Image (cartoon, rainbow over all chains, first blue to last red; front, top):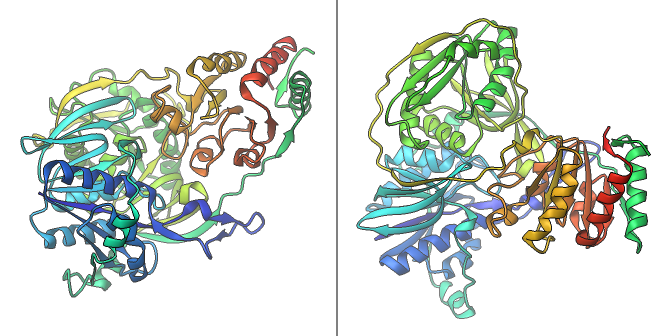
Length: 265
Length: 320
């Protein structure tokens, strides 16, 4: 069985800060790394491989410098990583990402299961898995919290807002996983050492995938007109003390005075 | 048709989207339609005119069950091909996010996710959207026709606009047997009231020790006709609630939110930051939540909350 894990070299959004006056997003120095959800993606793919045999390959669309960031992923049990060099500069739009991933997966050939995160840490659009499934013409089993393979079919629990569904779909299929699906393994030092020998293949979208960069840029459907940070002013008034009854009274006094609450006494 | 097509599998969200779509359409001299997809759609569809729809596209099919993404994508694609809208607005629930992206992929449409507002400018759709876990907002021009965007629940208000009946158009687009089949379907026990609409929320985090401690949260919430809600791990790991507040969950609009034992990651705070006032209780004075709150109390929530509730009761406190 050939399993492909789609992972993303993501912006660590917890490091993004906003200038409270200009509302500018301070992006300088915000680090990139393989996303948190991607560790769940890798764990899912490796566990399927351990149970049902075959090989696991990871694939990513990102800048060439991402090449150095896959060591831990590799140590989790991958054969290799294929990094497709980002044709746009910076964050790739979900429609373009899906298109590139689809071409790469077709080129890899005979893929049985594709695993994605339900949503990336930084882009947060939920668009790539459905768009990728459409481009590949295979079913998508989304929001997966549990997965196995029975008689050549994916059997999974999907977590929707108001229901949990157990579903079944024929392979080849794409699954998108939630972070609750598993706890990613932490590779041992030995695994990390061995992983150093595993290859990161660098693919070019033109020479390796036969796509045209200019066409892709043209296709980008969203044009950014404006960008600003969200600034919400909070009073940040903190009460400390030993007597909780006194603090309770004090807090209620403040809430009355600031007209958050009203009351008789 | 030159207009806006709205879809959500949830009726109240469809009404909210219609509310904003109607306002935008009136300025632009466009029409508003809504898609209703299901196994056996019944009821007075023409009455959706009262919520701002000029027309209602109904698709009935035995294959439209369990919110199956494949069949609902076929049905919504069929409606779009018939209605030929300029803009498709979809509720950003999990099924909505999924179906919208399938349709966008199939029809090659640009789709802006988690919009907080939209309009037309020189006949192009302009959408303001949340980015970077809600740290920022990007405004995009969507270059495809039609354009598509998704909107979270309770971003817009449902508006009753009169009693004009909408035109009901029933269509039968091709819907294929899906490859993915549902073997078992279990409804979750839902919170009952939408957290998005609650006037007051008590937001429980991992600092709460035991499920039985929820009682003190319930008592506090009950004083203000509020609801008790929680962070993602309290739902997904401890399974105390079927849903959670945050970027990947519900977003509240309460007058007052009291967080109990919540640490305050941005992914969670984005779910509560539209509350007018935030009170945070946490025993760790370095918890990030204190910088996101109006009033902080450094105390053990299990000891503080019963005392706080008693004082609120004694002083007959209500929301101002």
